[in-house]
Image: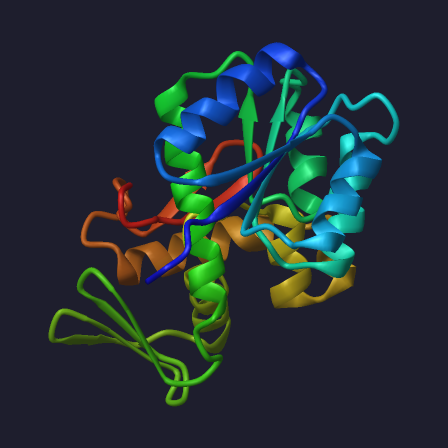
Length: 232
């Protein structure tokens, strides 16, 4: 019998705690609530959760720093929940390891969908680096660096395959331009987002049935890209 996913809510607003905890419990999740960054780090150390919902405006430690410390020790998904709506706040949180960013106020169904998508990252990360990987009608063979859609083999350049493999290993997770550039081209390329635009355009032309309406490689405006989750 599978145990329910354990979710740690980190938010000092009682109204948010009282809204989120019953909502998530009603969907079968095991929920723990804390109101500070220090308590969040302590709770994660005692029993690491399957997912963290993290507010940025905490009373003791800034949420970005909490995100940074969590990511340095653990690999569970982090969904940032904050009233900070500026694009730079989103980019900073995602660069520091957050998987997604929900801006307050939020709808309950939106939050639940983001939680479901983020939890898939934990399952996806358990997949081996080698072997075959399947999603919808797409097959990626990591050993042979081969991609097939349906019955048709799609020939990719080495960089195109590297980009696809990076995104496919993190379905539903928003990958910022900086994260992608560093992973594909190295740390010296983090200020050259045009590399991604060109490579993404080439990859979509080869991979997507309708490149102008992508099914797999989705754009997060001004932030980066994500590989479509099952319910996209």
